[in-house]
Length: 333
Image 1 (cartoon, rainbow, N blue to C red):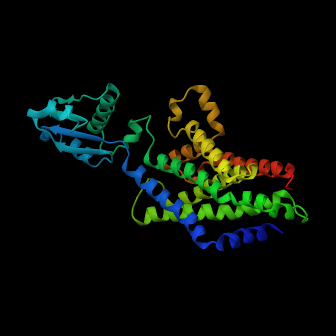
Image 2: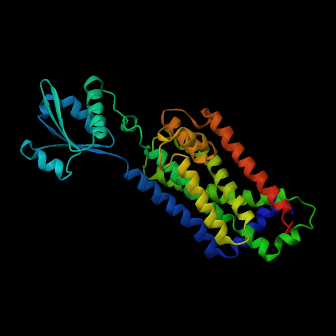
C-alpha cells in the first residue's frame, strides 16, 4: 500500500456509507457559513443621534458612509431619555463652534466617538472604525479565527477513521507490508486534507457569491485555505492517532483547540495580553492566521507574509513527524 492507495481506501470506505459521508461533509460547510454570517452581522457599531445637522453636513455624510455607524436625527427635548433607554450610543449637538457630545457610555467609548468626529472634521477619508477601537477584532479576523477553530475540531472527526483502523485490525495487517508508518499517516492526512479544503472552499465561495465581503481578496483567502486546511488536518490527524476511542480524541482535540484559540488572540486581543502570554501565544496557529488576516486587510497579499507562512508550514511538518513517531512506537505497527 502506498500513499495514493491509502487515500483511495479511505474514500471507498467512507463512500460505502454515503449518507454518513455526505452528512459529515455538508454539516461543517453549513456551520462555517452560519458562523461567517454571525461574525459579519455582529461587528461593533455606534448609533449616533445628531442635532443641528445643518452645521456639519459633510461630517454627517461621512459618518453615514462609515460601516459600523448608524446616523439619525435626535430630538433635543428627549436627549436624556433616548440615552438612558439605549436608543443612541451618543447624541451629538453641532454648532458653529464645534459640537457637544452627550452619552451615558463609559469614557473609553466616548473617547472613541470623539476621535471619529475629530478625524472627520479634518479629513474626508472614510474611517475603518476597527482602527479606532484598538482592542476589538475586525470582522475578517473573527471570521478567520472561527473557521480555523471549527475546522480543527471537525478535521479530528474526519480523521477518526484511523481509530477504526486500529480497532478493526487494519493497522495490524498493514505493519506486515513494506511501508513505513509515515506512509500511512500521509495517506490519511492527504485524504482528510482534501475533505477539509473542500469544506473551506465551498464555504468562502458561497460567502462571496452572495456578496458578503470581509475586506480580503478571494484569491488570498484561497491561498490561506491551503495552510489553514493543512493545520486543521495535521491537528486532527495527531489526536486521532494517539487515542483508541473516538470520543476521547474528539473531546481532547476540542479542548486543546479552545486553549489555542484563547492564547492565540481570539477572545483576548494579542496587544492586550500580558507579556508572558504573548510569548506563549507563538505556539498557537490562530495567532499567526489572525496576524496574517490583519495585514491582508491593510492591502498585503497572502505571500507577502513570508514569516507567518514559514511558521505555519513548520507547525504542519512538526505535527506530521511527531504523529508518525508516536504511531511507529505503538504495538499496532
